[in-house]
Image (cartoon, rainbow, N blue to C red; front, side):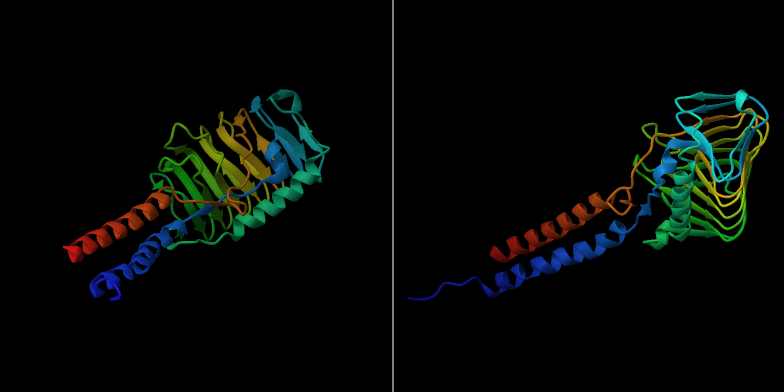
Length: 286
């Protein structure tokens, strides 16, 4: 009996399926790796304000949805002028929170890019007037923010922004916003500051500040959606409003947050490869 076989051209075309899919994956894979990383605050998540030495309030400050505490210091000056909504003065757990802060700080400072598109090094200059997408942004020394910095999460409520600042962070009338009304302000924005952070008068700010030394909010009703977490120094407040966002655990087990659109890009690339193969196969069968 004569053996029936596929035409040689069709067999060759069918062998191109793995090759086509491999090409599609190769095109999409760099974008799958384009991730920023969530920083796990651990026990520090429950704190809106955490200091190493002292917390000082010289005005009338309101703190929402978070505790305040000091460790290894114990002094809170002006406590009577602080209004706590949804939080308490928690000194007992502050030592554990400081350990968690130290780990989170080290993590944030050591993050490296998974794609060049996710990593930008700034050599000084002002962040005001810029629009940034999710990723890791490094300052070798100090960082300034005057004007409006827009953080565009590209429609992904899990988008992560990490700012690595070698020395100090200073703001003056700055506004940090996230361009997605479905996002909770400040949840996945992290400012790792090598020394001290100073937020100027009338600053509207978003993000969790992890400072190696101290944090100062200058007089003038600073509005902060985030946390003030100082490792070794103090936190100074003066007529401010601080709202801690909900605690958010790292994604994907190790903390990688997929870049918005990566999955769609992968599917689209694979589909394009399959369509191209289908057309080729149809032509061979005619």
